[in-house]
Length: 124
Image 1: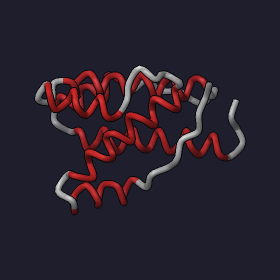
Image 2: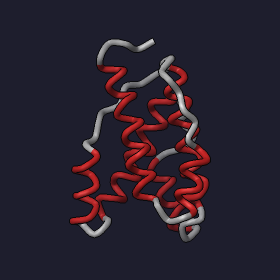
Image 3: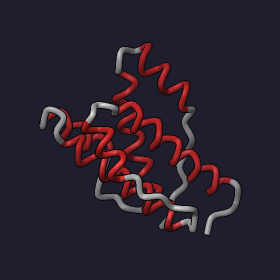
Image 4: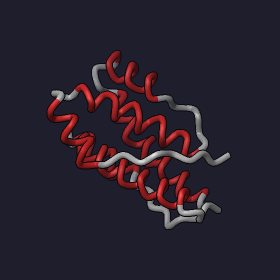
């Protein structure tokens, strides 16, 4: 079953993450994970669990998270018959180089496109 997700303004979320010294970044991380899971219909990954696993593993889980988020976004796009791009490896490489914020922005942009597609009545 395909669930609709809401949009987040990318610039606002980045600014809030910077102004709150990363606290909002945690909220964003959890929201991204939950939204990607909802949009793809794959409930194997929850935001709270992903955050806790990232903490417990001292950040190592985030390597898997980056890859998995690419797969979830791709799956969500495919289910809607949208132009689908599997950016799993890109997210993985950016994460390995410490560019998590760039991943958040790219993932949020893709989720916003999915949200626009759903709310414009073009859902497959």
